Image (tube, helix red, strand yellow):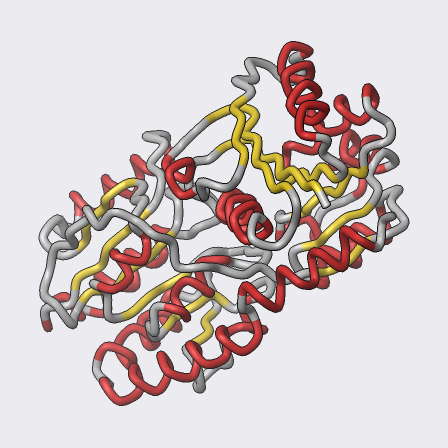
Length: 357
């Protein structure tokens, strides 16, 4: 088979990491694996395997016929059979489909909050869905919404997976070894940083030497300014640190002792799998698919992301109990290895592709 992954950006994010993961993993299993970024490159470009064919379209606007032509040329040159479009790249993929009707078009829905949206909020997606050959949904709630609201007959659920990448170790975390809490989340809604910061400050675990480390893209917008202002206003610059995007995620996680995800909604967070493979104890919002990965009290703590007191209690308990941290970390590691391995998920995606022919 000859498969091409399509993604709008290569800046770190869940959908973006999955596009790279699929391209890299499939390169070892099929005749041709490619990846095309439409709008923006980023640090994930450095993680694309050498045996993956790569192209950047440099799309300048929503309807960019030059970008469509460049994509069409790449597809015809490499005799691509299946175009696997992730997240918002579906629109460009549909323009391409109109010029190459024989190509199989898979759309991967990574948006966990779609299950709470109304059909009218997704008018363009609904129209485009009649051109999709199939849909892959990031969790079962999203799968049900897509089945009930879109014009595509074949809608499958397939969980995410993660693979430790070969990366250059450059990021050095501040704080004391053994007392670092890490949060891998880009600085934007719905990642809920302010609630996490408030819980950490009020927990006073920083008085015991614990530090909080925020890793993720900073858009320098209103959201991130509020986060940075909070840190300054609370005189927390010596125990809460921001780093922006980091390409050496697993190196960062190896320096950490506890991991947090505080989002108000999620689809299927790749971040939790990365935490698990790094053998970290986890505190996590009880939203989306998170409770299918984290078993409360066994492989981590689940909390209501809007309940400050609940988050504080979880922070205090996990920071004060080293044996609990060890048990959580080992249980999550074993669960992720058994259920979300590269081998298992890649075999399933290949079956999905084959079912369209």
